Image (cartoon, rainbow, N blue to C red; front, top):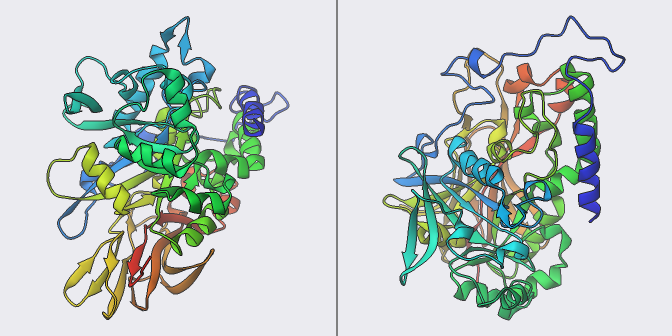
Length: 471
């Protein structure tokens, strides 16, 4: 409730003022907006570029699929400016905006996490955002997921719920009636978690910072959120408010809306600490949560689009899943995610190309999520990515990598540098991260660019590799 009230206050600010105004009714005639998407060379980075996952090289014959985990559709009571249904009819504008955003941002998949209010009241395939022209994925003669066509490219849509915990990829409802479903989706016990798995889902929790560590241990989950956009916005609430005021009264001070995420970025420190604790006890997957509701910042921004549109928030970051070459469906995605064969990247800083984190034992390669057996000489390898399509003659991003070892709530840095890293690993749980100071975006960051670009920000989070760990 506290979070909702704060965000509503921000929304009220978002609708005031007028671009180009100095705040006292006059205008700054010296200010000229930075170049827009039509004025940037196609072959170089620009904030509006959308790069398909197929254009990002994957290592060792694998393929990448990019997507959103944790998002709310009109089947959540608080989505769509609080009006997901009006007089019993679905909000079709909001419904279509979500579907269009998946195509526009070239996502390959989305795992919806609608609240049990409304989600429990509606049936499959409606909760899969199904409409005529889509192709349902069926098992046992029943729809379990949906494939939406984006002009010849398919987007896989799976259902789930953010209620007691957060199962993703539910293949059917648990329970026949809304009452039975609400009870199941709010069952925060190990039996409740197992019921999700029995329904084909992976068992995660939302907003890991809000959970007691003992509860997370007791639930024996598949994974947790290591980053959540809504929590980040609350953590940076002062910056959010000032940016909204400036965007209306002094737009020359702030980034173009497409890069508005950069000044807001904060690491979800408690989530990262929980992750380290949990990895001492069991395997634990980390995901990035968009948590978009399209219900917070309804005011029109400088580019004419609402601040919290589905498209904008889906553009800022994604989860990248590594898969074997061949056809991909919801089951293949869940298998890879559940194993931890994925990384999260904040694409607002630029698309990372060349990222790779793996282990080698002689000629044998172990990917993220793999268990390396004991008694071997293990080399961890981190390939540090570049910003895709960066202009070699322009400002360059400052990038470095780190290899980290989980240590009961801490993360011990065992290797770091600006070049590719190699580390001889003893037994333990290791992950990698890539940090960036995105100097290449300075042109679009406004007159406060020095402030906004002063510090390193995490660009890529890997999932762990388990070296001789016996749980």
